[in-house]
Image: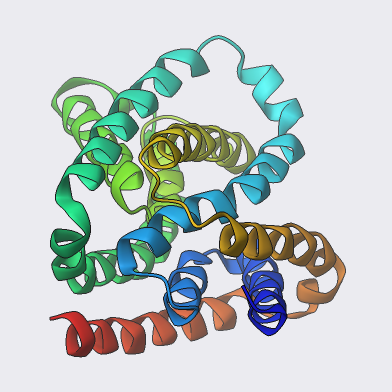
Length: 257
């Protein structure tokens, strides 16, 4: 791979890591970036998992105190995440390159909807958080578990935009503390990413040079953004990302629809 491509991917990773640390949505930047580097959509999606995994590890480490406080109750949720991720990743592999290419516009549409709806859901939960524990049981609890599994399956298949919805779902089903909910989200997202990474690597779907260049950038970008991006209004940044996601989805329908 030409050095100019490596530098461009690294720079894109820097920006994606910085944006992700403040507003989330890095997949909306990394996926098209990898496609622009010349990778087919399925390879670009699989390589994106590799690129984001180190940043997910760093995010998990940042919440190590909350995870320690949660302890054993996290294990069943991780097992649930593993099961959903395996199902989604196997489906991703079985779809094949041509099948995945046809699905790309619809996946981007779903990711955009998840990203757009996640913020609204979080605001609703902030106003109604007192009844979170009650909503984790009964018929609502069963429906929430079904939704949670479907999100893990989606995470194993494509994953863009899923983090913000998982965070809202954990808050909705009994985890009132936002930091603990975020710790759980980081743990389950990393779990789904690691399993998908192993399966995608085993089937030769990862472009390692491109993934490494972007991955190093995301780590450094996320770390450097702590001081710089605190000055930026996260809501404005989220709106900008959402606008970009809408444009990107429209382009995907034009290119692959």
